[in-house]
Image (tube, rainbow over all chains, first blue to last red; front, side, top):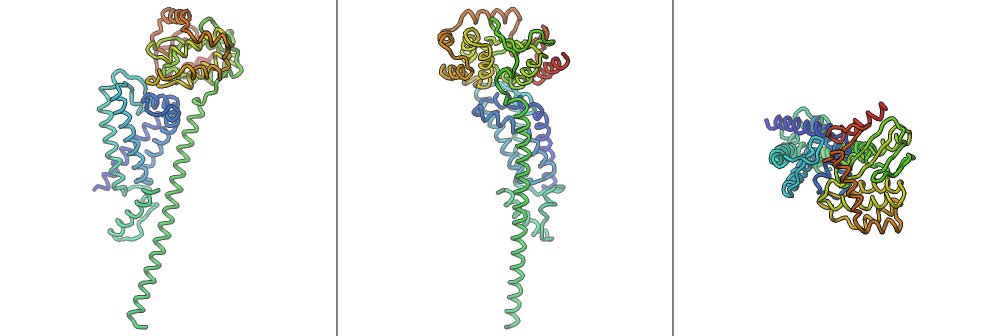
Length: 172
Length: 246
């Protein structure tokens, strides 16, 4: 059962990532502006992050959708969500009112403070789903199942193999 | 050898074979995972490179276009060009920075080809931001006492080095002087002018703001018509379309 919940988590988190990344990809300068609006990273680093983020989101999302290196991409996904939550809490605490830039755009927004709690709640939900995939990365209908087929046929062996494989995966 | 020890030896050999298989499988997986991760990193890097290549590493300078200094503004390209774009902007405004990095190369290249005439009119909108004021004052000095080319390059450098609003007060006079030097606008008259606030210049740009009813930046006029407020990508598209049709 938890394995099918994992498929749901993959589709939801992966879908959100791909959607968010696709919206940002055509406007790299806007993506840089959105990162800069947080006034958090050194300006040079903000530029790099703004350029890397859209494609990173699409790749992470795509991997989750097809179930490729699920524990690894789930970890990256969780770290990104954590970074976004820290970013939103930080601007909220400093009284900076910006659109989170999560789905393109970004920059000043006079009603931002009323949206921050919802954005944090949303990202926390996505973080929880990502962590579920880090904890239980083996899900049905995943490319991982083809690449890393269990050697033993018995159920127990399969679990053993899964753990072994995921240890390697997590370290990579 | 007893039957018992033969069986023991056989099971040891079997265990060794299994261990060998497990080792091979593990190596295969490590290689596979490493290869996939490398491939994914390459895709992300390619995406970032593509994004970085389409504007943000905009060069500074004229790209061969003609540059002239007005009383408070810079004009790039020939005044006979079919399309005229006027950009009102503030040196601390983040959207102006984004507009700059998105349109600079496009506008300079088309100005050089005679397709567009661009007027940059920096204004003092964000009056609470020290960088807005310092940068504009230095720019005014270079505009009036150095070459238009230096003023254009300084304009570009001020956007490339735009600080965060929270750090607006941390940009020092010597940093500003350094950028003036980098732009090729340094001379004794400029240094003297930069030392004091050019009240006359600020009055003139304030007058332009009230004449044109400008209360936000960037404000863009294409052939005398003000573009409605929109996101920067939308403004960029409108400019590119207008120049393309021109």
